[in-house]
Image (cartoon, rainbow, N blue to C red; front, side, top):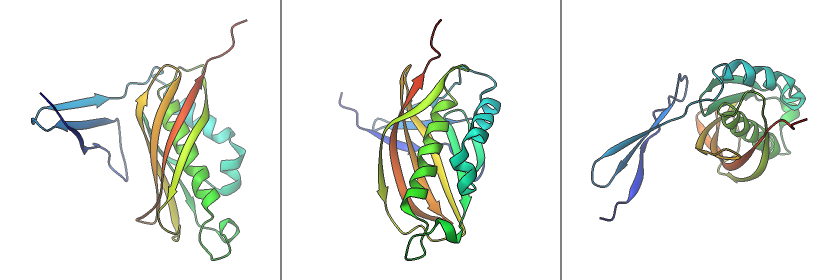
Length: 176
């Protein structure tokens, strides 16, 4: 039998979420739920503490709004010093919060003593980032032992302005 897979829905509330599961339905009507389970039960505290150490996030005034297993939402308020020549939020700033949201979404599923590092990403800029709040929402697509693939969308107020596909690497502590 030849099954064609398609996304049925993400089970992900844009504004607020607790936990995570993704529903997939194949063409024959059966369903499969993918649950993301963190290695570390205290992942949220660890992720938020690590986010507080990121000086670039502080520099641009980024806030971690939500974090859940395999998910992260980061937002910034629009400021004049973050704009480009036409008054839109600079693409580099949008990319920065997309990258961090992907990194922290991946980090939620990594062991407690690990670190996370971006190894590759692709960004598509879909519309000017023009609005009061720029929000990046990331989810893990597949978490492996070393590499994790994530996707993220950036919204300027309610308008989708950019999307990212990223690969994150889990850095285990060095053994002495």
